[in-house]
Length: 170
Image (cartoon, rainbow, N blue to C red; front, side, top):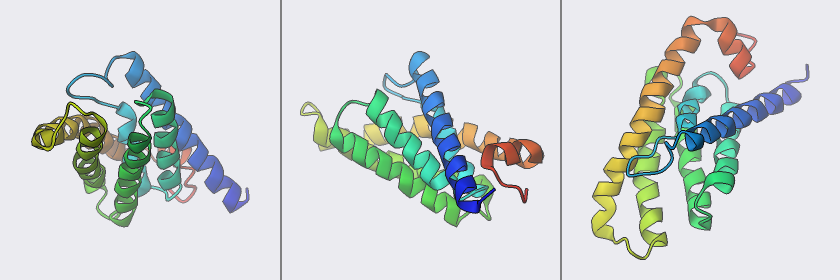
């Protein structure tokens, strides 16, 4: 298979998995409340295995924000940007795979509270620390715990890793 085609197919598959897992999170009510947990954020560690995960997760996040988000264009833009920053740094530190969730956790915990404060008039900057903690907890659960378990599982099961990442060298 052509490398470009394989790359695009892998990125599209990862984007589709992200949207599907986000939909499941939405159905389970995990995307509302004080602490929100999008289980699809676990996929933010996939750049450890393939660069195709960078556009895949980013596109999946964008589509999810368009389908299930608040409709806030700033949330759509900056929420997707936070994920892009996280997965780019995860790719950069791929030699330390068990730390790959940290960039996404921090990017979302720092960026999303500011977006919420700027979008919702009833919020002000005094709420930033609380929002940072709440968003951080959701990201630690989804990306930190589930993402780290995903890294561990894929490292132990190379056939599954190849199926998920399209990485034939695994």
